[in-house]
Image 1 (cartoon, rainbow, N blue to C red):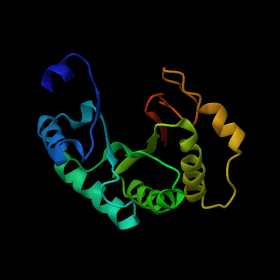
Image 2 (image 1 turned 180 degrees about the vertical axis):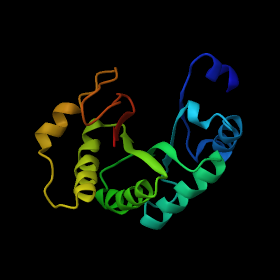
Image 3 (image 1 turned 90 degrees about the vertical axis):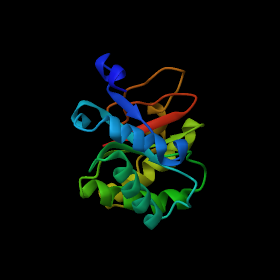
Image 4 (image 1 turned 60 degrees about the horizontal axis):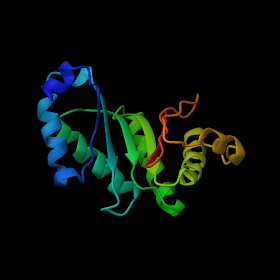
Length: 167
């Protein structure tokens, strides 16, 4: 980890699933006193059902293992067609973001089309409104072709394992 930081690597992506939390523990130990030098990402996983309480607990547990009071990016891992899971998870993410524990919220999916409902639901909760973004507008920004795409509202979208990040 020190060598990577020394070479200029400053994006670290982990998850509770990696080594049953051991990856987060090791990264937290390695980043002691250096947290400000990196962009740190982790995820909530399917291992626990996606609910409001499980999401809060998962993030809090990750923060403890990582030895930090915030992460730069939290991702809802392996989005699928179950919008009910998204509806339960997004409010927890927004609450944690309001508390300063999350800087950005994202999701990832094997199929870029699965990001569309995530974005729509996220915007609905974030804005406190029932009006949803036009589907065509969103889809035009989620064209994954094997390279990173940057768009004003959706930086860092990648194919194979499509991801999106929203502030």
